[in-house]
Image 1: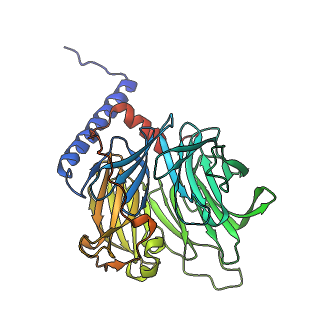
Image 2: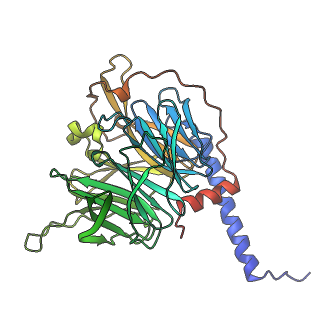
Image 3: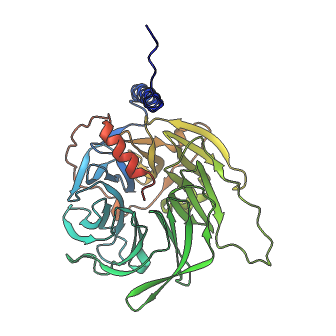
Length: 422
């Protein structure tokens, strides 16, 4: 019998199908191996964004909902239903402006809207048509009553939060359209004199730094000196600003720490900070010295956490120009999407808090890791005053048990959601 000749196009399909089967089997093996690691909390949807306040986590999920999860018992305390597409991002602002209560949850979605919710009751307050395409990022500047949104329409838009508790849509307060690719991540810095700087980044790796001025009812943006930064080759996935540096993770398999603003040309140039190179793309970044809840003890936490695929890498950044890899933590069986800090109360002494890391992944789980439980890492417990966000809340409702397998359709949807979309 003559050998059958397979067309090249079909050969490529066979190779692709075989490689996908290998990946699928590897993930199934990991799912079994790491089923109990990190005190997993199973979710019905995939957490694309994650925020933590007190002993609760809020997730933005591809299942069209935002979710409030009790981190102690793993149960769902509240569901925020109303979006007609995957929820991609979330942020908090004050119910009473200037109070710091964080009583309003803001969510952005594929349905092109921003919704405002009463974070405690789950009541929908307002819906704002926000972008001409997917809403991909939200960022609140509390002292300015300002919400910034970025989207797949490549636009950055400004929203006035002074009347956010009203049922009316948020009031538009300006926009900028310098990016040529979807806007993925946002960060800001308010100087001691009140000057506001905004950082915007896109899926091509471009980061722009802006000076924002409020004129009348509009925020106007001017590019800052040296404000166009191209140190990433591909998309920026997460971004933070603090201690005179801009921190960013990227799909180009690096984490970059860049001084900003740059010193004047006449000043002595600082020693360049080399990029941290990862084995694969990074969707999540967590520089512990910049976490507000750790600010009073920042010197005790000289660590940077970065996700590389499904692995969490922990670095000692005592010396920024020579970061040291301490260890790798494997627990998820699919990519890690977010890393956040949780100050967990001691069962016997509620004023004492230990530092935990909560990770979210495409495997439909949140996982909880005690920082001091990681080998080579020694961190103290800290004592913090009880605040409104850490007080005991009403008992949450039970959560429905979720499967942890992704369908082929969900894999494609998440690949599109998390990837570079024009």
